[in-house]
Amino acid sequence: ETGVTQTPRHLVMGMTNKKSLKCEQHLGHNAMYWYKQSAKKPLELMFVYSLEERVENNSVPSRFSPECPNSSHLFLHLHTLQPEDSALYLCASSQTLRGESKNIQYFGAGTRLSVL
Amino acid sequence: AQTVTQSQPEMSVQEAETVTLSCTYDTSESDYYLFWYKQPPSRQMILVIRQEAYKQQNATENRFSVNFQKAAKSFSLKISDSQLGDAAMYFCAYGGGYTDKLIFGTGTRLQVFP
Image 1 (cartoon, helix red, strand yellow):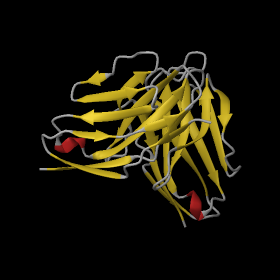
Image 2 (cartoon, rainbow over the protein chains, first blue to last red):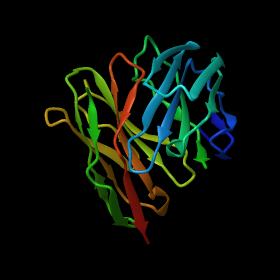
Image 3 (cartoon, helix red, strand yellow):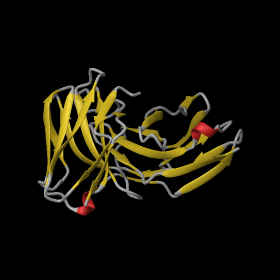
Image 4 (cartoon, each protein chain N blue to C red):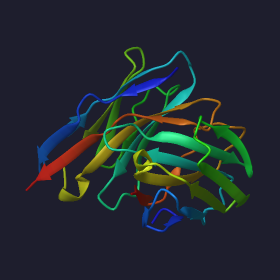
């Protein structure tokens, strides 16, 4: 256990559904991240929240909407997804100091998303 | 832009033997960090080892060690006395000095045979 919990572990949804992925960290960190992991591709950073403020959004389609209500919780709201959005979605957290990435990121076990 | 390349999609090793996973990167920054993460079938990404670019000494964590060649921009991972539990995907990652962003390679799948 790394102290980062993601739910659900698996999710199957139709293209017209609305669902949310949840991430919770118990490490007292102040930064949280969403990554997309597709087969045979590098992990793609989607969003970064530092001190509950979104500091990075890597040209992610608007059908993905993040929310960080506090430093321990991170959500990814999904709406009108496409089949190519099927992937493993990983959450991570770190204790960041002035945006320095020397601090280690701790990952959750991910949500395996299938869009039909 | 920084890039990370792992040229070995798959590697295999016999139990108790040594294996080396390769990673190269490209950057114009002088201050950065390099990481190896392990992702077993449970999917949880776990940090194996971290190297700070300004340190010349290669990082070591028990059976895991790195060969960091800064001029060549190479960062390989050596696993000694391989165990069945080492079987996983291994990702090399780059972290710039003043950003929260990590850039990952495509990964190397390591199989360990008894």
